[in-house]
Amino acid sequence: MPSNPLPTDFIQRIHLAEERLRAVVNATPLLEFASLNQRVGGRVLLKPENLQRAGSFKIRGAYNAIAALPAANRQRGVIAWSSGNHAQGVALAAALFEVPATIVMPSDAPRVKREAVVALGAEIVAYDRYSEDREAIAKALARERQCPLIPSYDHWDVIAGQGSIGLEIMRDPALQGRAPDQVFVCCGGGGLAAGIATAVHESAPKVSVFAVEPDVADDTRRSLKAGKRLSNPAATASICDALLTPTPGRLTFPVNQRELSGVLTVSDEAALRAVGYAADELRLIVEHCGAVTLAAALGNTDLCANKTTVVTLSGGNIDSALLAKAITAQRGESSGRSD
Image (tube, rainbow, N blue to C red):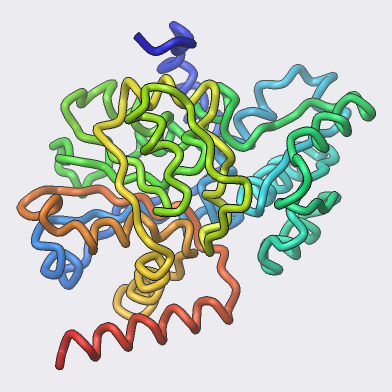
């Protein structure tokens, strides 16, 4: 049996998180496109968290975790580490609570994400992702400033906040009261997958939930196969920077052992083409990390054929140059297919 089990009241925590978030986040609707259904050979419903406040699902976990803090602790400010989307989520949540936020970010994080964090009033402490330990830096700052940490995934209140997406999925009118066959969820440290899978399985335990990772950073896939947490190589590089976590979370991994049906992996090239496809064909701006699930659906039509698949698009914060490159790659592939 997996160690470190869920708190006995965890599903109640997810429902409480949804209540806290109701007036704060956008309840993003499931979107359906006939052209995507035709290409995949089944029904695909997109959960567009790229349209969420601050551009990604991360505001959910960040706000819920800050809301759960004792007021005296919260007023000291909060500290987090993130390559971008969690940084923006924490910065926005802290601004809503009118408390300071400090974010430890890699020096090579996308410019659009760094600028957004600063615009929200947060302080950035930069580090080298290949030679420095972001968690050690954040924990040292937290001790020095006596501020609480808001981890990007390995925190029950963060996971519960992300789980609110699963509750929204299962109630969405597009499903007409019927459970989907499967749900695809982007996976870095595993918090989004753990939260969504737990929430979905509360009412529909037979729904298959698949995590999706970059093929060069498949620590969750390998860990599930091995039955223990394994790490990615320290120098792992991918355009899907937000999914380059060192290892599955201490809290998230046993949940995902229990809840996931499997893990799908996609290449950087496939993720980039999916970004282009979303922009060019669906008119949705999705970042490469958030498009790995769409890439998985496009690349696994045998798994999606004649099924209803919910695909989470986790974020839309992408540099314009990379978006243009993705559209070019997509158009090149489409041209090749038509020939």
